[in-house]
Amino acid sequence: MTAGTLERTEVIPKSAGYLHGLDLLRVVASCAVVLTHLIAWFTLNDREFWLAAAVERGVVETLHLNPRLSFLGVALFLVVSGVVVTHVANRERPLQFLRRRVVRLIPLLWVVTLIVWVLINLGRRVSSARESNLDVGDLLSGLFLVNFFQTPQVALVAVTWTLQVQVVFYCYVALTIPVLRKRAWIPPLAAAPLCFTTLLITDHFPTMVGHGIGQFAAYLPVLVLGQLISLVHSGKVHPVAGTAIGAVHFTLFVWVDKVGGHTDQGGSVPRTLLFAVLLTVLLVAASGPVSRSPFIRGWSKRTYAIYLIHLSAMYPLYDALMPHLDPTLVAVLGLATTALAAEALHRWVEMPADRAVRRWERRGSVTGRSG
Image (cartoon, rainbow, N blue to C red):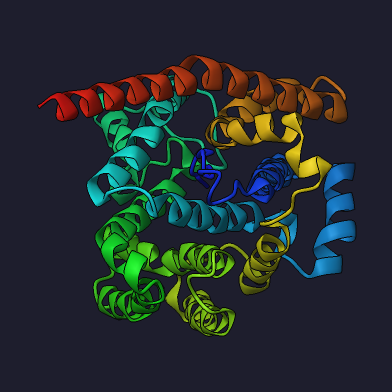
């Protein structure tokens, strides 16, 4: 989660109205993802931690969510990505839209993947599983997001499976932009039978590739829910129609969770998704001092970097220091390392890449006009 958002913060025209609530939602999503994996480290190592107990009692049990807040952050990132992508698709041509989305993902993905590949080959654990030494082929597969189709599967940057789902959604939106502008309800409605049919077909092909394609169809409804929130908020789809189509996608996701084997992230996945959707509906138009603060805006811009780097920033540090120092101190050090690494990646990778893309587009625009 764009993505992130996993989708990075976009500048929405003033006529459309910048949705400051999306910044706040990204911050909440990043906190949930990092907290989930922080607590997971203690669970994997059979160690108690006061924060894990507090989260379970104060949040998970109260709201009946997945243990350790599993899937909450990912669900939020995917729903928010659906909102943002639908907003920006309204003013871009299909190929321009697709190019901008992919270009914004790639530079940071490639840098973090290289960092993780080096750490793994140095014997460091950067996810729940400890990978063995990886070769250049494994690195290349991670750079182009095909590593999850390998046998045996190679995680590398473990959270990037969500980027695969987002890229599929980007392609779908790009293909349907002309229809989205004239009959906005058709693309989200058409996505439901498309996902359902894909899941039925891939169920008969129990291979790694078949499972991967089925996973795209399983999680695409989550992004479509975000798309519907955007379309209803902008007045392009009636709230009754948006709710009805959203109910279809939510039911499809629940069906996949129960019988499809693609969303094995806990017993409360549907309830966790419902909470993420309701939270997005509640906060998407938030415009108070908190959502408008420079601190939240700055944090929001760095959530993609946080999402990609947090595991490789925290886990090697925890493995090295937890046996020797106070767990709370080490946990804080891991969070600080994540913040510093995300800041460096944002300043020295994301921002220069974004400026380079904008310069390239401006030159292309000038060349096109002069031609």
